[in-house]
Length: 67
Image (cartoon, rainbow, N blue to C red; front, side, top):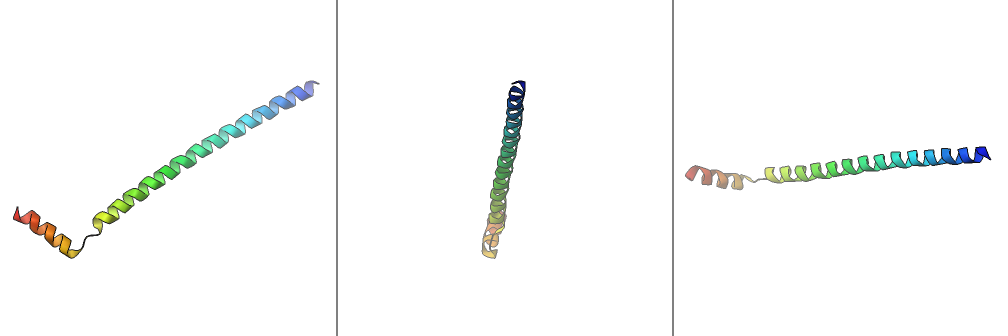
């Protein structure tokens, strides 16, 4: 009977360890996804800022120099 109690505690220990490792991996994955989304938003904003036509640049330049 002593072996059954020990097997149960080992199963419990392994289960808790696996659950802990799984939780850590899920948290890391979520952090990486959040970072990726933030970088994509920043990249979209940067590309949008740099997409300026020559007419827009000339207009902005003339507004800045005339004031």
